[in-house]
Image (cartoon, rainbow, N blue to C red; front, side, top):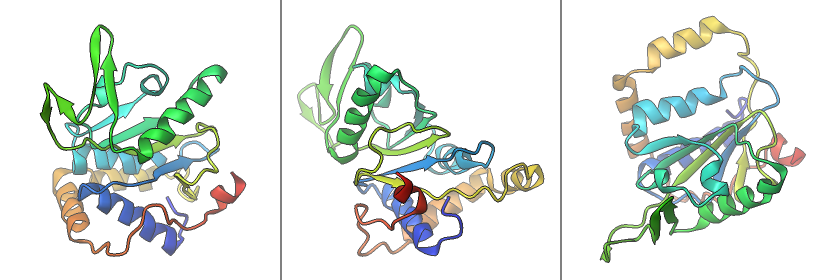
Length: 209
């Protein structure tokens, strides 16, 4: 996810650690590659299934960004967008909503035939703010104006494209509850003193953007 760059690696791991600890990230991780089959979804699949858990995470479509039907995100800590796709007319709307949600502490939820409500109030009883953290995986330019300050664009490596033995071994070894728990505890114990999600290192992909 950082093509061997140590500084980028530290930022990404700190971003995940901050999420696990319940901290607000003022940026999203944008995993964009024109090359398919390099395993960019492997990390998010591992986080959703074995670290954060499916109860608190979701893989969503662009419809929650382009319509008012976003109730499926309610109560979710971690949101993954896989191959965001929208019409040209919806692209600006999608980007605007995503940009707002990344930095906002409040998301307004609604669904068809349902009265909308803010994530901080249910039945007039105050609850903790519901803050999402976002990762976008894509093979296309999914985010309009991705040069903006809210988007950390990862330098994805193509080193293991087509290396089925590598990916099979990774899944067999790491995709289990024991490894997920170990990674979760490592994230909890990691010292992220001084971490600022808005201060991320420059990447080659970001320069291109």
